[in-house]
Image (cartoon, rainbow over all chains, first blue to last red; front, side):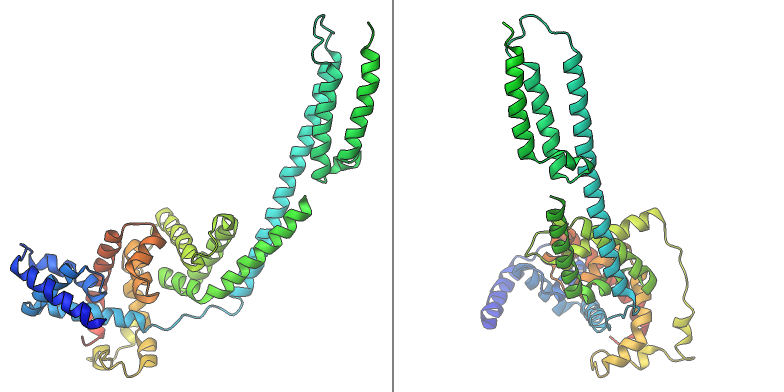
Length: 188
Length: 187
């Protein structure tokens, strides 16, 4: 495959030389690093190659760039202090634990606030005077809905509110209360 | 729910630690060459790896973990540099390691590359000092190209910048380095 590349470079080189663009030595020089890395396209590679054949200064610059590359690649790997990587590991674990705690705190506080909000809503709804003609949504159903949401959140979050019961208990309680309330509201 | 989250976090932390262990040499090499000394390199790694762990959920599996960490280290480092401009310190060790009238040019010939160990020991300090004189963005590209041997495209992806920028930074960085290191090597 190498000969295919060389042949292509030769062909493009001939084409490039036929139509040599008006490039100054400085512009070729800017491309030397990429030329050394074989990171130029075929056309530019050919142009730079042709320029190098006639420019002593750019040839020397290219040699120097290649030497700098060799020097950097020959550098030995630095050694960390012996306790460094174990310390890093400990820090990652500490970060992991603190992240877990903060997630628990967020969930716990969400459950707490959810329950508090449900209680507030319950108080508001119960203390509100009964308005005539509001028969479409009965207040107890609203209360049970909030209670259910807050219980759900608190049980799943294993918060201090979790001992109020499981979601299943809440559903049963809610149904039982609904039945009782239906009877209570059947005044008419 | 918490215990499921805990299990997931544990698995995530373990996976993260495995990846760090797998790439530790490259991560350290990058940090050391970027900062120029062990203390700063270790601080940078500690800080960047905690950031990386916090953002690990956004890391795409199957991509290059080391390059992802390089990007985080680069951002962390640049933030630090911008916050606190470096104080220029002239080294005394560099001059004293060369005897009167003789330069390293007389003892190191890279064309032969006969004794790489000698080369590494003799020139590590001057090369690192020369690296430190580069603007940080040039230094990062030079380190990735010439020490980590990444291609232009890989550097462009790692740093999320155009290939043209990589090419010009690398060229300028190397041009500065060759001037700084001219006295040490017979080209």
